[in-house]
Image (tube, rainbow, N blue to C red; front, side):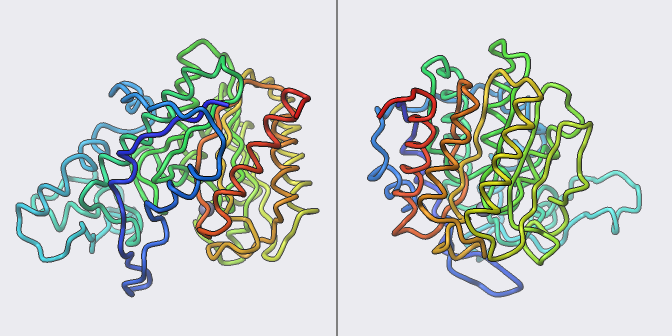
Length: 343
Ligand SMILES: [Zn+2]
């Protein structure tokens, strides 16, 4: 199996997040890359830089320029914090239908594209996010190799067309999907097995007839991020399927959900598959209350591989450093054995 990565993805390393007003230790840390690289047996290939057009196929120019430039502007303005911390957000409740302007002050502008306070921009954030998107782009262009794994980090599935949050800046899975379309696939399925709903991917492809999005995740209605999206009645243009699970759900409910999403992707007629591969539904993971076992991840990989499609697996979450690498490796093993019928 080919694995795509870039050392530039290590350059973003948040020491802290601001969560409910508290400064808490960062969870989406650069060490995750080392843990995964140590565990996954792949032929590692360097990521190429994604062209700007691959990024604008998914994101607004405004968001991209903001992520690229805001940290330098913040430093130049002399703010004491080492990260760009927003304090005002131009929500619909504030604007009441008026257009969102771009504030003159950097501390005002800081909230223009952010939707939470835990996803901060600091030294190296843009370089890492840009490299991760490049890994997804490179992987999608090599999908004729069968199964290609993109070790993307920071993750991406919470990033929307015009906004960032949930530890995500650029939507790597969406970049992979639009690249597959550009390469000639007529229909692409994105299946998201991260423990959290990929609200960014859902909103980017909402009502698109050529991209199916299916997600199995902890029920946002039970109090979990992203709180506002990920409910079962969100069907977009008919190509969106959410399977929210109760907290404490284990392998049986999880695998039934994955099977349901896979069946829908097959009915959709997908010609290629993007897997948003988070492993934070594992029992040991501190970021979700789901209870999926290592055997459950092996079977998850087998179900996804059973679709028999050219597949780009894009890394999303997974925060328990001791089990992160082995769980990713196990899922990829399930994907590859199912596809090839060997091993
Ligand atoms: Zn997650």
